[in-house]
Length: 559
Ligand code: ATP
Ligand code: MG
Ligand code: MG
Ligand code: MG
Image (cartoon, rainbow, N blue to C red; front, side, top):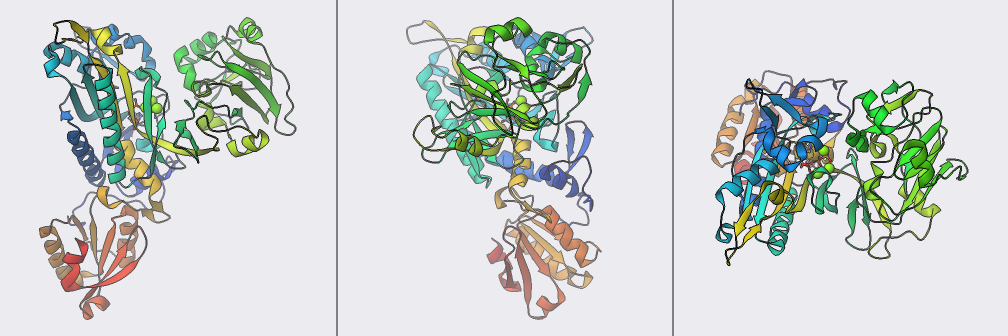
């Protein structure tokens, strides 16, 4: 590709709206442009990277007997009503109505529709197992679209669904996908960690997330340095005190006069009560705080202490909390601006995102707070030091904490959808049995962003070779070297190497800046000095290492 023709409008300045590196660099490198909140155009460079990731994903899905198909994005409401998720999905679902007043949604995920397809055409045990996948846009009206492609409202996902005869079959499918995911992220050149996960709105009970390790990650991961235990903090089975609290950051402080209970506040803020799980920050608004720990009956203790002395200010009984706020279990008590909460529970994971805290200003509540992410500064090391003896649930190692980006997730669904939608087969004895299902997602566009979060420097992106938009970038220093550059370009292309050649009429400084920004792994500079000696200058974007290659060896050395 000749750069003079490439549609990759690079920017010198960092756009103000972009908070994290991948978003900034994708805008600056001319890879994406925003059309609406969480909706982006993928310009040619981004599209090439997406193509690379999708190809790796396809190869690994196919290797594990996945078959690609394409399900409709627009899905009828009926099947979602049958599974019970039309209501449950809440505001995250984009809904539409056709001219006949029939309801539809834009698919946020495809369990309902794939189950319907399979149940209509599969009758016999001989036709199973089946592993079907697609790579396609998904639509989720995220309450807080942000970070560019990281949390979009339209994004690209690979979703595979497995249909097996029984639990043993599901286990095989699940392991096949675990292998495939490990290969996909390894081949993409990413540092990642599979972790135990909560299965959330999808359902089922066994699940793992593939976390790309990066500071910008929204997820907190606990891992043990002595055994292989690793879990999303939402799930971590641990006796380590999981804390919430810290300095309160005002995020959309909204006046909520007279609103006290969860239902009142959610109605007032127009947020579904289910979504309070992640998004609402409940306060009594008058300097009191309510900690809600739902779905957990083993809360041992909830302590509130100020950051100075660790003084236990007040501990409410569940009954008290229930009386005051109608909450099942939790804490109500006074809290000041620099105070922290520590919760001791046998199974904390689930509860962390359900910890809800007050705005400490009379008649106000916060909206859009994800406690772990936006509000809490948890330091596990400190807490551990403060509470020696807390250890890995599997061994005696120490739990450590890192941040991760959820790039993929695998779930054992069991018979949740086959039961709801009637997906059965006839076994060898002619008896009707429920199919046993699993589902497996990879965020293809999020993986592209995650790759940048792991591979950049002050000058721009450093693409891992396997997913780079081009492998080689030839930069002709001036018009005098264009012919040699064109010859090299032709040779490399013929050798099957993808090359971008900078043939633009720009100053060398501009070309080098753009080359660093775009981040192609091998840069070959064709300049007057080198050419005089029959050489080109080579620079590796990942390491910064420089070499000189004889013109005659460029093709063999680049391959
Ligand atoms: P998150 O916890 O970040 O909201 P999720 O658990 O809701 O993600 P899944 O339903 O597991 O997402 O979807 C499979 C994959 O799709 C995720 O692992 C992630 O890589 C990707 N994904 C999910 N939501 C988004 C989004 N809003 N933007 C981009 N990618 C997404
Ligand atoms: Mg989500
Ligand atoms: Mg998730
Ligand atoms: Mg997930």
